[in-house]
Image (cartoon, rainbow, N blue to C red):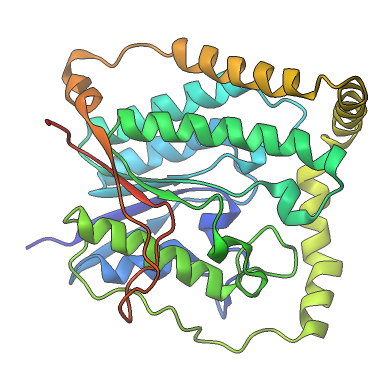
Length: 314
């Protein structure tokens, strides 16, 4: 019996930033891989700084050559941190990548992600435009996950996301505990979908939590550099967006910004092409919610708002 092929696509989150090991970064996908089956061939194509265009144009062709049984595509935050942000382009890139992977027969893993402005603790006028962008990306990911029958993890909110102990010093990447939580929760969803036969990943960290001094040193060097590289082209635009935000709030018309963002998402989804005939079956899939759990058995996921997108006939 051949090994299960698992290919991970995405950015620094999937690359493993925040979960250091001797040879570099590890991350949630590498932690998840051994729990999928007895034999797994794991390839991590994720690259720090990647946007949805990079996933489509560079990572997806490489993934298709590997003919994965399971492919994760967790991406989108870097798009929101660029002055070129365009939700229509994000939707088109994701739609094409998801279609290519599922057309080849891969089980698709997706996730919605937390708002970077809130994670960084930015002031309201700066945080709200970023939150609006991330909500837009998450809405697109939700819709396309349903369209392509993905196993989808809600990782945008909930008590486990706001637990500071799960995050690294930069507040944008999970630490080892956070990466393990993502791996545990993805495993639980895959097990429900019949795609994970191994034992769940451990939620307990393997390495000691970095000291405060070590965390601050990392933040002052590599961490700060990461934030600057990702956000330097956004800052002038973000300041303009913040000024616009304050003007609307002063006039009591802040809701107009939310309505405009929602209309842009609707237009982006409406502009997507219909799936080709051979993909028509995936459009019949529906969302099956997983109930909230207040007390999960040891070694299983405590899922808050997670869902599996599965075949729907009833």
